[in-house]
Image (cartoon, rainbow, N blue to C red; front, top):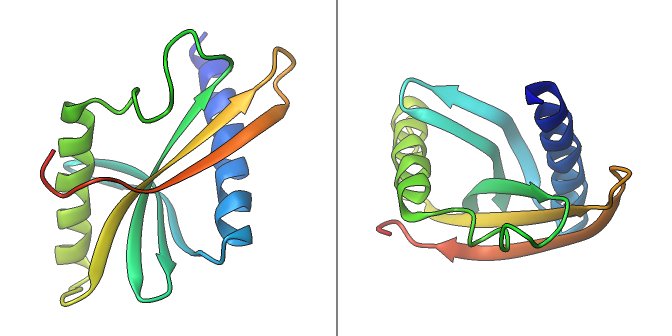
Length: 124
């Protein structure tokens, strides 16, 4: 089961990268991991640094992508983003938190991609 979930997640992240590139995001990192957490994608959109959380679904039974990112997950992403900014010595830059929702059909094919820019703020 865990392998199937990882495969689904990997497919979703690849699809999210494809979508972000089409929307002129420059991908800086994928699966950034540090002691306080993990961020799926770190990208730039113009002068803004975007921390992107990807949610892959095979239907709407468990809610939308943004509904799946509950306040505790938002806080974890924000803590990880702060760690990233400190580690990379980045200051004085606009930052936002985007969400990409990917929908797969029963055969694992991508049937929907949805980008939510600025999906949540720095203090959920």
